[in-house]
Image (cartoon, rainbow, N blue to C red; front, side, top):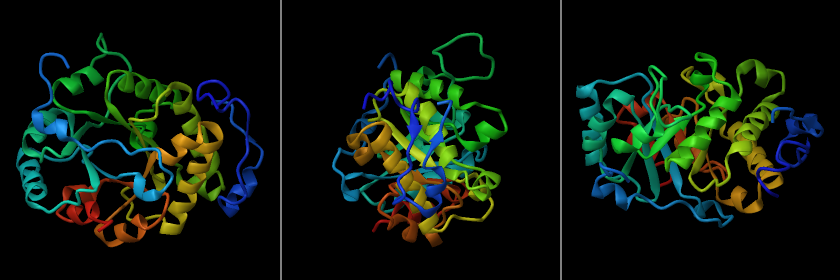
Length: 303
């Protein structure tokens, strides 16, 4: 299927095999549906993207640490020292989402095999947009990822599905890799709307993304972010399986097989190994725990 023609413009059929609750949505109609300073040499050794084999092992595990609005030079130096001295799983790609003001500082301290991400970027290269930063600016200081669509951007700053998708489109065009976040609130889950919500959010991305090679989707149930509550491995796998099938039905089997889907929502060293065993969970987007030494254990969850 052409990922820009009929995606989300037709009836969304949810396979009964994906999840029991998905049966409620068998007929859901979704309406909305290098320039002067190059990254230093170590970044060129960055891990390659996963290929299009359908086996779980073919999709390289990817763990992101989202520091949010936390950290200072001292704490960032300590975290970087911990990661530099640790034996990190070479089969896991690691990305750190650092506050913008510390991106270059963190890039110079973190291991060269650890990627650096902006936590947000605007949808154009430059202009009169006070307070915003562009993908070009992120690239200029050594970042090669950006986190977009996080629930806090959606809820607190009122970013719409459409704006987030436009940001993703521009970031990809500028050569950044994108962690594209989706997820439902507690009210939406309790109303049985989880699949409907994540499908709507994916539809917005799909209308703008033409090549999914440099995209990682992060499913983050909003009710589990920073609350200490975590979706059980079974609950997380259920949604990830739905997303995998959605990709097959609306984009292509190849994209479905290759695209990595992270789980985010109070991931800790205690629950990471169980979550990592699920076939459709290809990594994590970690909040508070990424600021602690236990982040090493989360990175190594597949070992």
